[in-house]
Image 1: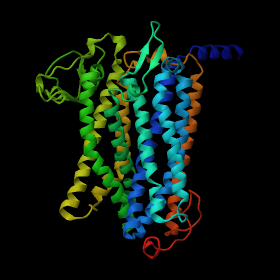
Image 2 (image 1 turned 45 degrees about the vertical axis):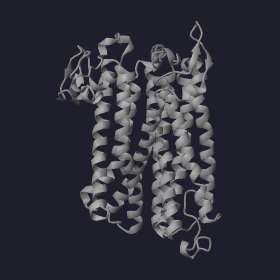
Image 3 (image 1 turned 135 degrees about the vertical axis):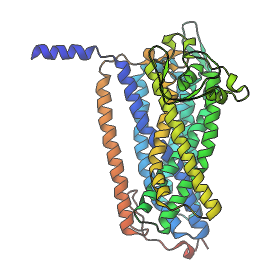
Length: 477
């Protein structure tokens, strides 16, 4: 027994901490990023409902705005917890990275902290401002929530884009950062397109997530005006964002082609430099460097990379850099699959948005048949999968670099062999947090359906006290 324990301790002492650190960061980021679109876009959708309620005396819109603000508070609180954990993980999992690059990397996060506190303050003001402020004054307290959410998201993405295109620092002969230009750090070459891509994704995913709940309710027979309005506001936001996102994504892909050719080679499964490269749908890279399976579309990858030169466009292959400076074969396959999932599901959501737009254009109403509502009910999950796939392409495609061209992941991670314990603990805590959040939101939804009107307590988990219809309110008149 003693010998077995000693052997177990010896094995645990030799555990490679790098895969565990990567896995923990990947899991917590994947969890947190689901909440980001709601944190950025839900306040905007709430204000749309709030504006309609005040401007047109719309009782259903008032009810939507009031309830959405309560849901928003829950998701904001959960996002605050998961975001705080991520902040600690940078120091715990990547101490060498922070020790060398923290002076530059921390600049955007300093601004994100300011915007987060601003957002938290106005979330509280907006929620507890119901019944305590005049309608328009209350409405305007929601605007800083939207702005702070946007600027906070851009700040975080600026930090990530800096990792893809590091700039704004000066190194001494030993490789230590001795000077930092905060403006150049934030506005690095990757930042404008990455920030736009994530910001539009936030409105796209947030809109589809909220709309999917109302689509599911309509499939169950709840087709009253309240549910239709909830669907229309959220789905319209997503439908407008979807074609914009496709344009931004296409431009970003061309930037990657120019600035990060090895990542682009992984995306397109290009083992050797060539022109007239096919766009391979699915498929995978073998250990010998050959591409197996999939559906090749002749010349399309070259044409999409630079339409000006078309199929003659040359795409740099993976073999142009040594193996230690490029993603492994398994990582290449993960990146390529992530790209296919992102583009495929993104196209499906775009076609669904076109269906919705065409119905309004030609029939002046939203589609209500079961096929459309079923797809709309699934759009929330599909949009989240699309977003997660996009981040897999961004992060795994940068491997083996944590700071592109400057520092590798293996050189940045903690040397603590007990990091697997924190991975297990964080996984359990996050799963419990996720289940609890879903149960709270479902419980709120059931209570709201039972009450049917605006009444109850002031807390974020129940409706507020009875109010008069807006058209009878003196402030509105």
